[in-house]
Length: 541
Image (cartoon, rainbow, N blue to C red; front, side, top):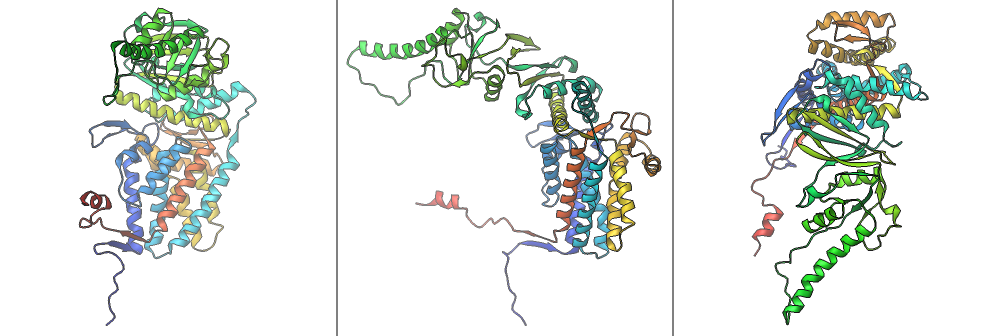
């Protein structure tokens, strides 16, 4: 009898072979099942309560999967592709998960029948390349030369994205706001230059876009109410300096001979502070913003000289103010004088405005205004959070549409066109690949099917109509959610950037191939008997 060789630690869980592949496919389908009903304009929302009791209402696939904390190692791949889709293009997070799960579901029968996963993977990769090539071929490029035309295109793309969100009724209003915000940015379209501030109370239509910077009034001391709250063409100083008296350190020790010496030490501290304040005043500064605290003495000093100050300004707000108004964030006031123009920023108008129960500082008419701020209003806090997530998706889509001007029709139209193309191609291929590519083609139908199911339509009837229209070469026909029928979604202006679909199909196929290629999972047990290095270090004598 051969001796038993033990390689893995006792208690290690190892599962392999065909059952392992099928188990992973089932886990991925369970993940897709959790967000299936959130797809499309008639999609439902999910209410998720985390372990701290915080409730989140959302129908964004990536947000839901992030909060679900999936522990199955293979199913976590779907969470990762949803996150990557969110980071890369912003929208299509639910579609990418549904598509990956459907590809796995359609290839499951081949694995059960004993086909090797490598053959399936090869065919799926081939079909993916054909699908992305077809999108590039049929996508429509919109002229960028005409600014008005481009703005209309971007608004239509933003509206399509917002159509499936909680704020679908206000999509016209928010689509314009998002497009205006993105077009204010420079050529690189940096996302962090669009600030989003939330103020509870009021209606959604009271939300506003500021062509410049706006941030919430910071913590202030006595004397703040005496300061002027409105300036035209102010000189703005951006500091990273504390302007307050510091408490002595507890363990500091000073040995003095007489009271006069002690007075000199106290006076020196005041002199240093007043010296800084005097230099700012002499330089002709009207508005002082600092990342660090501005104390009560400094606040009163500035109020007496008709200057405005705000301390503890958040880092991103200070940087956006710098980008919009010019100037530099300085760490010393030593060399400041009236000639230091390049150090100071400016704008046409600075004012403090009451919005709901909050006060906001506005910098408008900025000379270098390559930044924008959205101030969102709404009832519940969870509702405003979901509005912010929806606008983030719309901003990402508009950014992508500015950079890549190729568009396709949404509402399941492009998926049906790809399904038909791949089905026709599969008939020209011999061998096992034919069946796999045909199954992959059928997987695309999950998007229009789910759109119908979520809207309460007869999915079989609508899909039959779509197949007929696509067979007659009407490639832009998709689901019409408002009239329970099919319609030309290109003329209905249900548009999406082609890059979103290419990214979703590529990511979904890669995830499916990755899961199909796993034939063994080894789980190493967490050892309770072994003492960690940290514990050993603590118990050392």
